[in-house]
Image 1 (tube, rainbow, N blue to C red):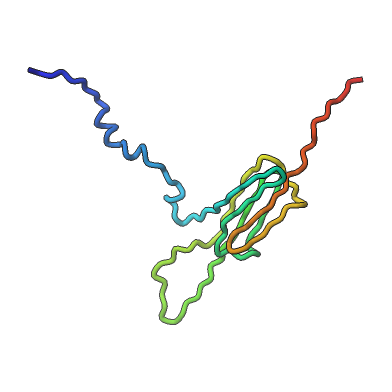
Image 2 (spheres, rainbow, N blue to C red; image 1 turned 30 degrees about the vertical axis):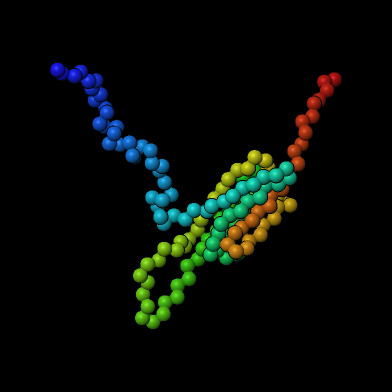
Length: 141
């Protein structure tokens, strides 16, 4: 006796690509020579606190700019070449060059009270929020 089955023309096509669709795409991993500035941002009622990883960067090579609610962090890691006689480099994986990142916070920053500390390769920014001006209702005369 012959069995009747339902035929799906796309069944085998999607079965082959199932693994590709479910895997996350890592765009940063596809470009290993591009350094990424990683940050953590925390908020409380008075201020934002930002921690940025900048390993191997000198304190003088870091810049922080604040414009309203936009914060920009830039850094440059300089390459120091020390070749000894008879020595050759087999592999170099450390990143050198400039890296920067900008992000916008939910409220404007009071630049006059902002503070920055750099210790053990971590930049810590304390960014106090600007006092919000309450809306004022005008009376019509």
